[in-house]
Image 1 (cartoon, rainbow over the protein chains, first blue to last red):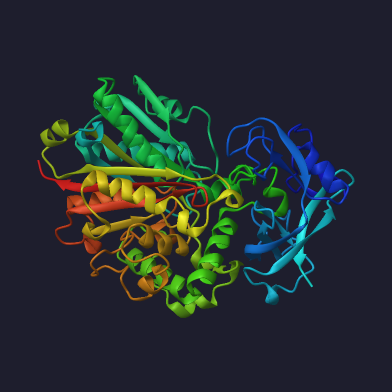
Image 2 (image 1 turned 180 degrees about the vertical axis):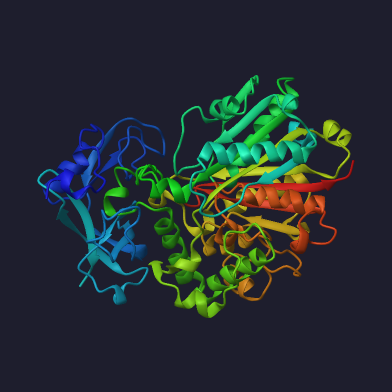
Length: 140
Length: 387
């Protein structure tokens, strides 16, 4: 399905600061910036380290593991029918083993088995020909 | 001495609330504005500043100038404040206080309102995703509504503290009871805990009756100096203390529940007022969802951290308790227009003008809550003052 057809919100792939994040996702890797000054690994990518305002960073591939910080099973397609084919879907906040928290979908996991603190692993979903989104699933 | 010490809210008004087709947002704002100025005992010619916000359902550029023009005003100041939640209105008070102190105005009109229902039906509502933020890193995953963000925190509170859906339901039931005492509330038909439990899941663990309403409605208030307020010859509300705290914008960037800004904002406000939460005769908490009230009573120190669920279920929220919460019915049952109605009803309580839901002899009211998803907290302590 083309971006226009899906109608779902898309990140700005032309944002130079975040581009390595989306390029890594295309390769099936979860990468985040690590501040060259204070060592903070941070999400989402942004121009300055939110810890110390250093502008230099090195991209680092994450291990892909983390724990479920919280989650919600969304039962309603809000505003219009853009998400009607997806409900119910799970929005989760995952705390990566490296520290940062990411919001993403939790997929291929039995909602009845979801518990805060559960181990999860990153996986990737192709939204369309240009965009791959990180997602998570319960660790086996 | 703070410029806020000299600030009084002297007039409040709200429009009808509900589904009001044919009444544009600016019309609703103007209706509330004209009524609030009359309620203050002032006239059009007295208003020399406008503070406003259009609400999020149809955000408007230069909104305060739009309100001024629509009402035929040519003020020195027309300023939009958008902190989110009660902070939007508290920031209007803060700005008005500074402007009065600077000699730039003497009586400020603060006007809010939106036609949240009808604008969507007309297909002209604001595009989804632009409200919640996180366009790049949250919205692509379907994190497009405020309520899903709140659900993440409610779920975590349940996990950490054992809070239950039934306890959240107690908030909904109490709000609806208060709304049943308010002839202008959008939803006045009483509900039971069973109704809450039977309402459909929206974003787990939040059900439909955990969610605030979407309304067509307007609300406005008038701010002036304490001396001017005294000259108007009626009881008014005076600012006793104000505090705020901003920790993040989007849910993935939030600190954990024990470090959200609510307790910090409340502590700052109470310290400046020389009071504490337990001094409040009437409590107003920005109830985007039932869980917001659970978090709010904890933040205000009415119960301990994590104890908001049992506190709500104990009946402590209702009229007749020591610190009743959202006596107008809140956004859960009364109406939702940028959260302005909490402040309006706090002022009514302090003026003894709250009708069947009046707390007898109310001297201190607190308005507390957040914009965003627990992002920008704001707490204002108001006191009754007689002329």
